[in-house]
Length: 276
Length: 276
Image 1 (tube, chains in turn yellow, purple):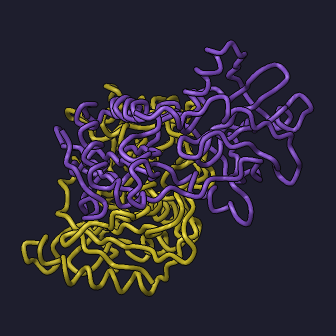
Image 2 (tube, one colour):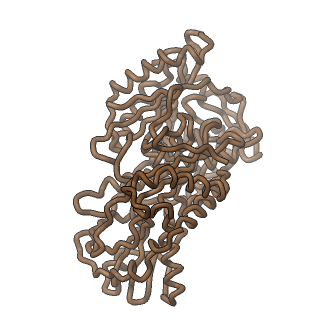
Image 3 (cartoon, helix red, strand yellow):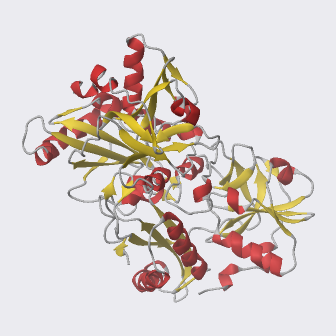
């Protein structure tokens, strides 16, 4: 079991390992009243990745905490509409204690529950993005994990200004990997293409769901390296940015160059209809 | 200026970016009563690296906060001895606010001051260390920075058990880079050898001070890649682990193999005499 903290009441304790070392995980979930978009997948990911980090947590306890969070927060951010939009964030840390980096034995995790208003949705007719100058390094031990070690994404996000919606980060080999808060999905003349999960800093919930839906519909989906030529070349029919709060966002402009806009994905597959 | 938090009083606020993303830095300083070992270098590093991350902080303000920390904490951890030992930790975060990863404009940093008792010093006749199975990845943008993104070190520190003092981490090319909380310094038949600063996750204060002292004394110091052969080979006369709280710690056993123990370094150069 974990210690539960409500962000509107108090912060994590001074000795918490989340603040000290980023020793934890988080999930950000799009809510409609008391239900969450792809909620079960978010909670499953947190439990699975906590296991990879050696943080003990049970799915049933996490579910109970979410129910309590709905009771506490839903009304505040939805203008009292029963199915109004809000955002729930779960921050799970290893807890307090240990000698420096070395965690204490049997320490109890801390779970912080916070809520916020739904952000403004991006322009569905195509957003502007650019390339980040911040290189992305992914430790294979943590590939895909939404850990609290996010300084690379913070530094890249500082480059987002003006009308930019996102910047795309590359690895040291020059492969395009992901945005600061979005995964990449390309529509090409040979099918759908996305960078492989093993290279991702964060393997998004919406990305995985979209890939499954596309494959179930018989579409060709390839996980492989993506470079600039794949996007700027004539066989690219559209680039989507995937984020589980904002959905599948089509890109209209990349580094000042117009891209063909394919905006059919969000209509075909709408995860926001799948409330749990 | 920053908001000052005392760890014995309260934790950082719920919306702090340190806990959310590891968006900040820390310093751990060995104290003797009201004075600190290499204190000026620690504070200079924090100010310099805060600049690299775009966190505004003035050295004069940091110094004032340290003076206040001495007043508050020194007596509690030194058994009332005027020059008793304790440890001061500074955690600087970018502060609260912003949209997700993107920091808000003009947000005020948070500085948390905490104190603890001096840890037990390691055996000066030689400690036992092993190789870590956790790969070390260093983003060139953050090389050497003591940021709050330390999940790799936490996972490696979980491998330290029994009589082990430390584990040594390697990069993806197999070069030995550093321990979880220590830098490496080899005494060899051709002089002193240490991995180059550009490859380090954390460029330690004691490492830099030692290199300067050795060079000033006319010793040959080479910063270059270090592999297992460099340590296990016959030209290695001793391996030191450098940490600004624990000093220059000689290694006696590496992965079960005895190493020659050179224990002269701490005697020749004792940073603990240099109180500021």
